[in-house]
Image (spheres, rainbow, N blue to C red):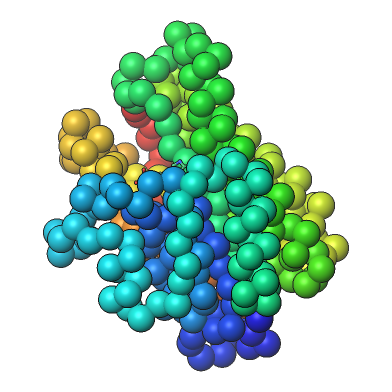
Length: 277
Ligand SMILES: NC(=O)c1ccc[n+]([C@@H]2O[C@H](COP(=O)([O-])OP(=O)(O)OC[C@H]3O[C@@H](n4cnc5c(N)ncnc54)[C@H](O)[C@@H]3O)[C@@H](O)[C@H]2O)c1
């Protein structure tokens, strides 16, 4: 299904391609799915819960479901609801997608997040169970997706994988807060680098993004509790990023223009240099 278009060709540059995005019923994942669909891809939108769209506010302030948003742009899509760490269900989904559309070209392992409150999770007070939950939510969800798509991508001799780390995976938070999340987002970077080495001979690229302060509906509530001015002041650009800015980077990494980029970590953080919790 992949396009033979080369860098510099006209949109839609993902025409004929098939993409899967996990954790995509809201927030950044939904924005990735919408962007890839606008770029011409058929999109498989995977999440463990499609009923939470009331929490997702679009830029105009309206709460719309993933299905409503995808329909509004005329996307060709499928939705699948289950926990992304379930390897059997993920494999069955991807196999059925390849059966229906002929290939799986793009996979974005976006499902993830932390547990507990940012200010109440210092490294030394976290329990093994805290790490285990965040490991499952961030690392095993990626492992499950990779395990499902890699055999097809190898056979196709083509694939674009994007994993999702975080600025929290690149450096410690003040006073070691949210250490379970940071540790697992760090693991994602190492996993990505090893996957890139493993899969390069099949012309499969593997990269990761590390978003900084991105103003999804969920995160804006956290930022407000710290203070918007304080958060903005931690970035060189003096502002919080948008989901669309993150999605543009994902769209680039899976595009023909990024054909010689693999094993890279792309920070999307407005030049964030200070740290906090
Ligand atoms: N928003 C930010 O500022 C920011 C910054 C750095 C990294 N990230 C990362 O980006 C990704 C998306 O973040 P977001 O802000 O959009 O979060 P979000 O909570 O708004 O959305 C995450 C989505 O993933 C789904 N999900 C979570 N665990 C899942 C699982 N096991 N199986 C299937 N679906 C699952 C949730 O149901 C939800 O729809 C996460 O991996 C997060 O860690 C976000």
